[in-house]
Length: 446
Picture 1 (cartoon, rainbow, N blue to C red):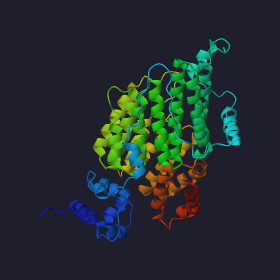
Picture 2: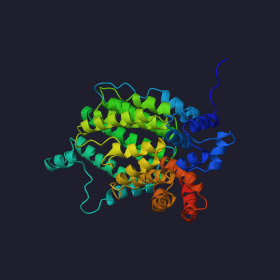
Picture 3: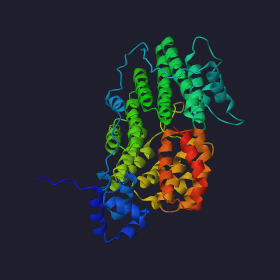
Picture 4: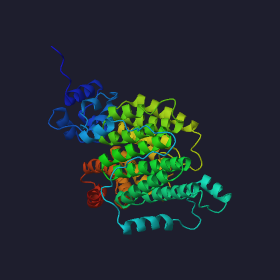
């Protein structure tokens, strides 16, 4: 007779006894109550993935328990989008036509004017919003010639993209998504009316607009739109001659599966962007995402190897051309260290995670609200899971106003985990003080 797979509770009990721990000792280690763990061991309560990873770490089980908690099944529409080939074959010579996804809500004239004005007016005295390449080029360029419109258009749209990304740090996605969709279409239309070389450069920039639109769609909790816009970014980039963005799109898609809790898909997608022919930055970002997938699976050693690889690749990155938008985050001084702290939370090692996240969060720019909340909530989660409830509540209290402002679906995932962890300490005065505002903030997020 084939051996039946072990039930989570029975395996947890076996590993606990083998480690020489009482139920009380394990409960103290993972900061769950003895009663909750007893119900899980006897099969009267279902374990969460978070508890499985905490117990894996406490019992040195190398992901055994995490593997026994089934992942959420993927949505059909998202799976189809992930399985399709997003790269369209470009043609040499004339700029090809590329259809774009439909915007679910076309922007009103007032929205276009408001967001466009904000992009300009948000630049304060002394602010630098143009790239280094754009500044040096404009210093030596004669007055704009009507016969060569390509460079002024490119400089203007690069500046706009930089400003939209800046606004995206401080605004809810719904404020920017309609306008970004229209700006992407406008760039594509301009590319089709412009000469071959300038047209392809405009298409390449349109691809970056589309990629950013896809990211904001994910922040707005619209996975289907995020996948469509990411695929459209690949089509535009491929038509412009840039084949590397297709591989970066795998890194973006892996982020969707990561937030679903699908470790194997996250690892598989990230591995697809680790080819030696790709630039070091894309490979480094892919290695980071692969490490996050291994952390979800509870594989500490594979996660650390991925992070080491990411550091090596990102250190070797020569940097983007001066005028080109940067792929990935621009607000982390040391992204690998920050992601190391992030992964340690998933690996069930909250105390080690909190030490790293404390240090790295202190280095974040003050105006990068979305980034501050993203890593700040995970920092608070690390402290909460380490049993430091009062400190976690103080951190959460400071983050809640920003969390409401940026309205992020991905941040809300960690915010809900934080809420569940804190609610286990329902008699804590610190928790009771912030509970109503935490509940209200969760109600307002996508």
